[in-house]
Length: 111
Image (cartoon, rainbow, N blue to C red; front, side, top):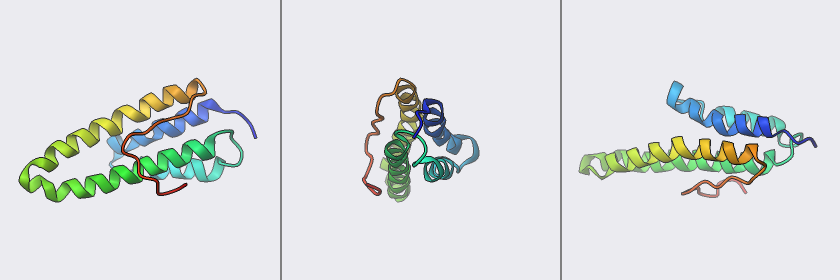
């Protein structure tokens, strides 16, 4: 198993594709994790964190959509957007220094 902090950084930053393309923030990290989890040190652990975070954000977004009718959902979607943008960047920086990522509000879909 090799140490590849650059690939870990790319995997974290790939989540930002959602802001550019509308999708891809789950698909690209999932593909990188699935193909490299046995080759790159810490990829399995960090990949699970990323996929769990992306799936959690998807669930929370689905919950917020009907709540838009009572205006609470708008604030929820704004907060989710901020969290979804900031934490991949923070965790990419952590990964570049060999630290472990932490994602808030992340449900444990994959353990």
